[in-house]
Length: 294
Image (cartoon, rainbow, N blue to C red; front, side):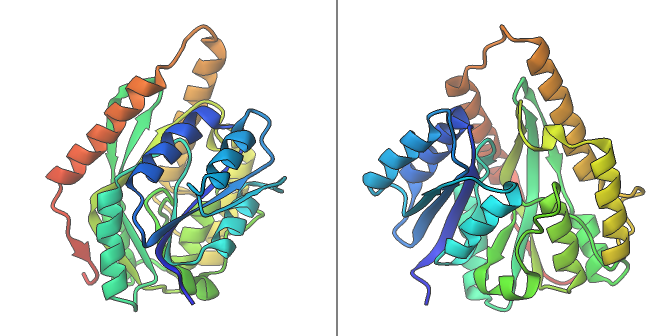
């Protein structure tokens, strides 16, 4: 049934500078038991032609370019195409530590009763890449495992999903902008088996023009209210997780600064290698344990 151990899935639209960095890195380190699935939302910035070329050269395994209804729609297409035992989202402007991801994958492959794996992460701002913060959901995970809370939120940047667990969790909700937030509440509320890796598998990079940076306060409030009602979500002292609020706040700051700094150029070839190096060093220095019971 499965042809690969890991399916790396990407959904993108008009993000060519980021896409090139992310895909070239992934293609360079890809292993024989892994595949790359790309969904392009009918880009007009050259991404489609770039991806056409990669597909023709057999650098990516599956590829579709067509309009999407929204970001959840694009990601759902990719998950349905995935042929791996495990699915790892690769967001085009974020940074990933593939050795750590494979370590988590090995745990999942050796322990087939686990549905999801999450981890610690880093957050960086593209316009201020020197300032990097650490993020953890370990306490929230522990409270959930102890039954103190019915659900808890986590990001999809570090999420590793067992493909056959989708029959339990369902796909991403196409009605939500904060689709990873809703998915995390749903999966935890349904008591999916989740393992927590205390290392660092990913870095969320806040960039100009991303979906998160455009989320309105009204949408945030509405989705927070739905989370409370549907998943008995108690929040992190708020109607929506602190992590999600911080992600949106930083995204808006980055977006505003980029609008007001049109002459400011970003040297991607310099910034991103440094971000990858920082993530790699942070992962190397971490304790790297798998937490299943608390």
